[in-house]
Amino acid sequence: MSQTLYLRDDLQAAWQGKDIFDLLKNLPGDVFRDKEGRRTLRFELNGRSYFLKYHAGVGWGEIIKNLLQFRKPIISARNEWQAIQRLHDLEIGTMQLAGYGEMGWNPARRRSFVITDDLSETMSLEHLGVQWRDNPPTFRTKQTLIKKLALTSRKMHQAGLNHRDYYLCHFLLDESFAETNEFGMETELFLIDLHRTEQRRKVPDRWLIKDLGSLYFSAIEVSLTSRDRYRFMVLYSGLSLPQVLSQQGRFWRNVDKRAQQLLGKWHRKQDA
Image 1 (spheres, rainbow, N blue to C red):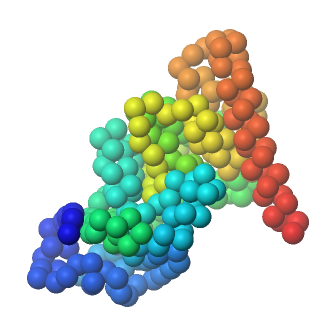
Image 2 (image 1 turned 135 degrees about the vertical axis):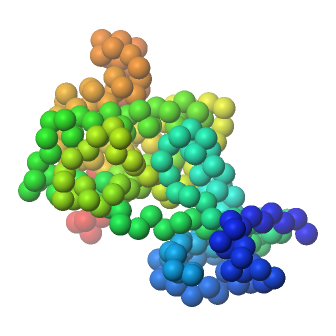
């Protein structure tokens, strides 16, 4: 039976001699998700906090359903731990791996897991829209955050990665930001929820558009100005604004179209 297993020293010492896959299957903790063969929870061990994503096997029904909907089925945690490793190679802030493993040939019954250190005392960028309505940021803070997001997106996409859930809620930063409202280029962002991330030599435009459109949609409440959007486009593309508008106009119109589609879908869901 094919098996991959890695445990960092702290977990290796705590679980020496145990069947790791059976141990993790029923590990107690604060459960955030438990459906479709995936279980996500926070647990504590020897005074440290960790996050576990355990895949018990999605079954052929779920795999076929995704394929019929032209979606790539997520059958293993391997996708996530490889994405984490790649982001570290690129020096893009993300989670710290504490362990991962995979067992079994059958894709419908394959068991796998990924364990990361808990990113405690952090907050999501999703809260910016609400926070900034009551406590507007300085010009420097807003512009620096736009620059950080644009350059992070550019580096990730140029390296052949697309996230597929690329929303502000999947960027975390130190919760002290809620008090200071100050953001600098040295402020670290952590990109999370990488289980759907794809890696290839070159990301097709349609997946770039989906990532960027999702990010733009999630920033709707931040009240971005046209100047803010142009700044992101220039930094992301590495071109001057006239070059962006003349060479990539259609691309960015499609990004905006994607964001508006998501916004319309969100409004319909709210009205239902």
